[in-house]
Image (spheres, rainbow, N blue to C red):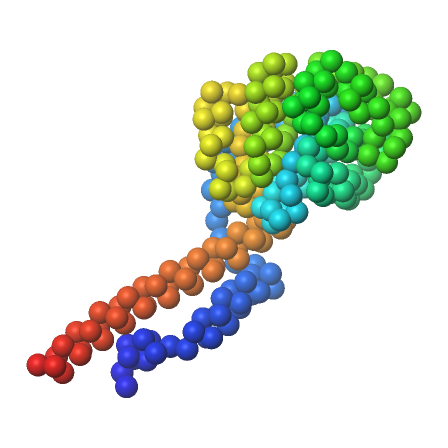
Length: 278
């Protein structure tokens, strides 16, 4: 039996094994495939870099646990960037299933890396039902909408919130989402109150938001795991998304190789069978 005939009869279980190895190996031996920086990611980074020290920013966790592989690295990279700039960070979520707890976990972990103190350097407002009313209401008074933080502490007892009454006191908002809530942040908060915004979206939803970047309603956009990897590179802290891009790139190359070999094998074998038929 020739080589191409063997390819046609290749046991599919070997494919699963090779794909599994392609997923595991980059975590042990990083390949460091190149990741190009898009103008949207660069603009987001430059905007945050230009913020004055001690600026108040909002980091919004509007994604479900099912998309954490794509979205959470964006939130982590943004938190690192904000804290490295000594920004004071307010987190919240319009997602009841996991949003507040993910905000709490991510922000506290990254805050500890930079020696930041809860209540003074960062606050988690948690979740409030009815996000359209919430977004509009915070334009008048954040404390009226969120009388307490996520753990039930009155905002009046948190030093950070003494100087933050509404959107007028917020210099930048970064929304990480896997759903349509980002549209409302742009149409209500950016359009209505003029707060500069950046958006991090799942890869499947990101194309819609390029038009918002073009119209300058958002200052930056991260799309999927690649967008998160770009941001990690820009802040100088390669983490989960960058490693994930290694895995994704290697698996894609492997699958392309299988497709090429399979098609070559098919045509070579067909040609051979025709010759035998003659």
